[in-house]
Length: 129
Image 1 (cartoon, helix red, strand yellow):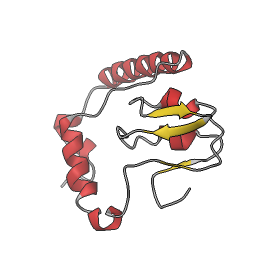
Image 2: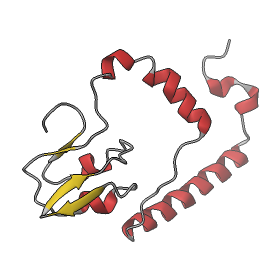
Image 3: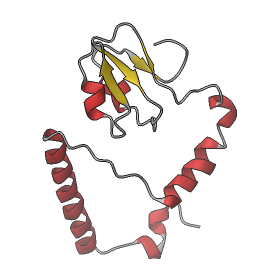
């Protein structure tokens, strides 16, 4: 019995094939970094198989632990309206109104706004930030 998926002959590649894969991955990373530096953020999603793995491997397995979570962003009064969250949201779900962020109903829970908020004013989990 193999001790890892890489022990499967189907998944083994030659050193040269692996080098080509790494070179292509590096090119893709460099292109993505350049796009992000120019304010263009990746919007591509994951494939159907990955969705199914996530569904059965995480969502259904841990459903009872996450059933109280929300898909509605909560933005506290500590928001200063800098606009970073609205700029990086791939769904254009966050707007700045009266110098404060407000969220729509298109959140995909990518956590970009939560991770990048300098004031830590945004949350999805819990009732308050």
